Image: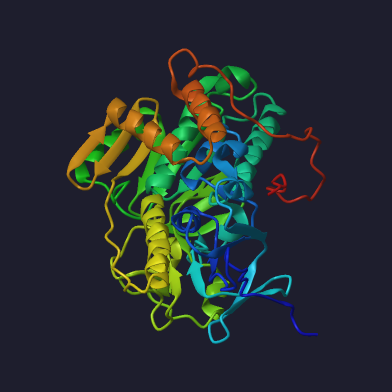
Length: 448
């Protein structure tokens, strides 16, 4: 049976019969949404394809994972974009194939959609680097469901510890990765622990849990200047976060992390916060593949050898070696949309001119670091307030901004920061374990 074919969708323009060009955007993340917005008002019909019905603000997922924010605070309904952009339709499905000769894409439901212009902005996924046991026993923090799984598993295991009074000295949480994500989630876990969990769990001796960071390199936040790395390490130490530097992860076990230097660290919950890679199916799309399995583009973000096909965001291997962060994705997506406008108008494409707006990382209350274009270095309260403003401004929707700022201020501001007010999920009642049941079977299911 042949697959049904849709398009290219070319409705008649007002007052004439000339069809509108069809732009297909794959991925509703930072790059994809930016490309869609850049084509607002353009004489095109746009189809946005994403496997989820929402856009996730990934820089704040660790706050969801640590009970600081609700999942809805950092997600935005993609179809809401149509309220202000009538030339857009949203398709909720998974891309499985691209045929650049026939200019069609194929979705998981076997529907094919034709295009005149294509923007690949489908992002990346967690990279475990082939580490034994990592995928099976560690929790990634790259999607909404993964963040919820971390949060719910943490409280399930705290309840397990509390169910045996006097026998536990606190859980051990290991965060793999000393980059911005690892430092931020470790800092947020320390804030959660110190935010009243000790009196909330009097059955557990000492703190409810301790936090460790494992980093292959000799310093945390290696993308930041040395002075900010030193500051971050001191702030983590101040929050009783243990740093295991200079050795990578050899394997992840259900109850421990083994390092390449032979060290074995007990772990009741292992969080994998290092490394991303393109989705495996990208290699099957017959596209030019460059560094780290990403799609190779020219300076204008047009995929090499494929006129009218663009790649932006984490999936794109550009000549500029851009970091895999939100700002490069946003600027790349916007640039791809502008280049389609140029082609529609008969103008040549232009190279991307990336503006480095800086990198920020928050460690805890009144403690953050910021490197603005390599020229301005921020730390402490100033960096924290800049971080807050940038993240609130980056959210889509006024409701998201309002609830997020309320959640962050209630976690970090004076008067609230010592109260046990984490957001928790549905924690099942503790039952005696069945004989012979392996440890680590208490990972709760997390809905998308």
